[in-house]
Length: 295
Image 1: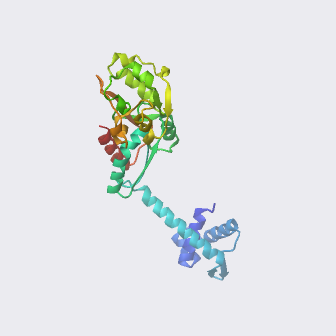
Image 2: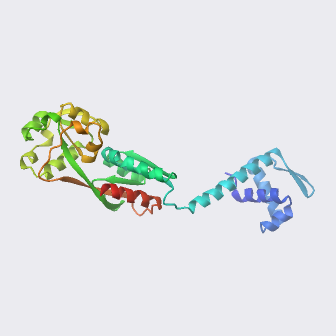
Image 3: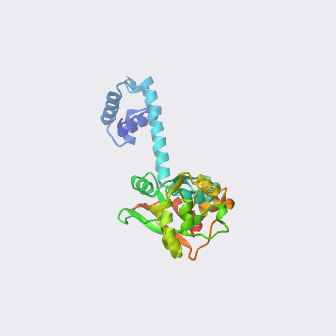
């Protein structure tokens, strides 16, 4: 890498056209200026100046190096200007959450981006473990999870809650929901189904349904694409458990049956980021919108 101090001296020399003026401008001696140019020529491996007494002309290599040095100076100035900027409505925001939550949030985040064209939102649908890894490695700025991680490694704040629902084929709309019927029907699995199902059975307020053992349910299908999970349910192959927002936004939402239970089942949502990392102002804009959506 070329020494930036030598490059600065070289640029000043080209712009003043005189060694003495360069020395005065850089608060150096004239021999010091000459030394910088000689060291730069050795580092480049090319002659940069053709000297004629106190005059000089740039060689072709010198002209190329001057253009390069000017570009570096411009880029450095631009970088320093950008470092001082902290707009609440400009810059990249990287967010990770579950696929179900991404389906719910993304349309509203796009609406926010439409209002602020310089705001760039990068949304990744990922499982819990992957979200934590991405936050720790710096690949993602903020994440939304349902189980708070260790506070020693993450900044954690409550964000809102997600309603969970049992989703059945439409043919079961007029029949009682019993453990026997669910066992006979079987489970349509997806990456988060056992977590959701465990919460639902524990909190739904129906003692008979709560007696179901998830590990004893037969698997009738597996889908890892959030937009496809309800298709086998709609066609009668099995049942599943999903956040209500994912069901509501699905194309077949009106073709499945969501029964009511004595108690609403809700799952808390937590916003996480790197421990002690000060996030730029634009994340306040994003988090305000996320709170509005999750409330």
